[in-house]
Length: 385
Ligand code: B12
Image (cartoon, rainbow, N blue to C red; front, side, top):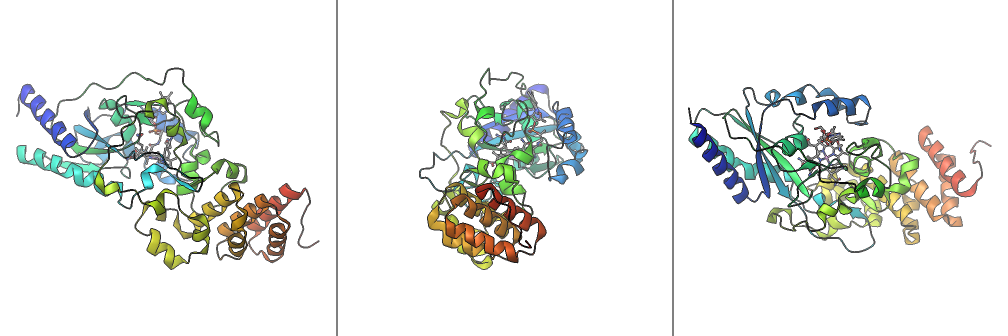
């Protein structure tokens, strides 16, 4: 058994190693029921998890980190910065976290591994487990409890020194460590920029996000359904994820652009070519994006998003690709292409949608196309009439 002083020194060594591994912030929290757990229950109760049913199914597991590692008593929480400057240009936008090909889950885990090894070298019987994102842990709450930052009005964990452009990861262990003071203040003050800037009004109240209205959710997680009609214009140029509530945050004004080399932003990911995406075969999509975060919404999902972005950009040069997409095998893409062509509103574009409407076999898509035509022309289109 180590003395209190030895535990404190050992904890400092672990944190120093984590910083040497390239993490921008680190702190240690006790393994308890997170203080924000009741907020998760309220959030689920309100249905703010939308179609992410796994959040509801695993709510019990989030009650205590024990569910991931029996006997856990400490969590070393890390922040990995991913801020890589500001994108230029007027084309489609991808959220910063997805500009590189490397998977952040792998990077966080690989860089925490030496810290876990140090624990096991010092305490051979100690158990450790590294988690990031996908495990049932309220990571932001543990980040706050480890003193890394506070929970902002945009729900992001925000640090006074590095802003909010970071991923979180945690090393769970049954070794006793020295805990940092939790962040119990909120430094958003009276600022409400994030709440006001959200084009889809996804924050029903400060600190609470309704996923069903969040562009990040709509473009990444809502894979099998159309984007709700009333939110399509709000997507603007976002084809994958969204950074607006962080872009406008004053705490990110001086966010450092120091990241790890593995992130390596790629031009094709910073602003993908939506027209090329619509022309792409499923095989080409896998070859081009298979190893990137952009593969998550899937071939149909990302092309649905691309069509909506082209509609929002009113890109008349994209008319041929959108007309071609009206015959896509995916109803998701057909419906989005019809909507986009109605945004272009040229006689040719509307004519193409009208022709497709008469052939459309998917009832929901047919209704969607009819609504798109009605919106632009005020006329009711009944293919049977
Ligand atoms: C589900 C999920 C999503 C969902 C829902 C997001 C959400 N706000 O809940 C969707 C798909 C929308 C999403 C989007 C994004 N996500 Co996400 N997501 C998650 C995941 C898997 C679970 C989050 C969760 O538990 N939500 C439930 C709610 C209730 O929890 P919470 O928002 O964290 O709320 C806590 C506090 O805000 C506080 N709280 C809640 N209500 C209130 C009210 C008041 C008044 C106060 C003071 C506090 C407070 O208590 C809550 C419980 O602890 C985590 C990984 C993980 N395992 O934790 C990543 C995670 C939160 N996501 C992350 C990222 C990077 C993003 C995006 C930026 C990606 C992008 N650019 O598109 C966006 C940001 C959108 C946003 N503003 O949240 C990072 C966040 C890092 C950070 N600095 O905060 C995480 C931690 C992943 C990681 N390992 O790095 N995400």
